[in-house]
Length: 126
Picture (cartoon, rainbow, N blue to C red):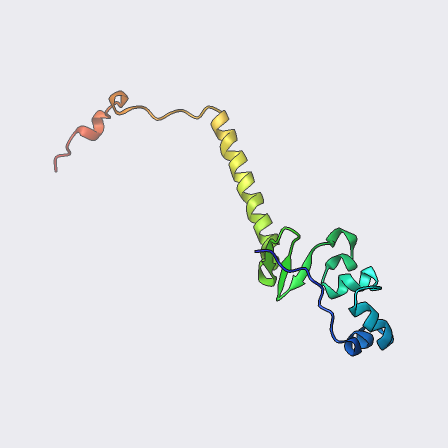
């Protein structure tokens, strides 16, 4: 389910106050005939207004939403560095295990190849 990227235009009075323009200018913007691109981006909550690399990303209802509609909440964003550390640790461990395998660790012998230790088979007399 995609997020609506429609622009919410508040009443002209609020729009004029928010952007420091006349009510007449705000009315024209509401009609979408002469609205500056930066104002459209701000009103659509598009983060590209702050940095062009974030164009298409929006913040809504406590979520960061990608242009592909991937969503992540504030608490999840905070866990990203920890997840990166875990992935790094798993990669290190995997590389070590692969290295150990490449060293040619001996296979365990089959039961038919086992040799019994005779001293373990003798019973002790008390």
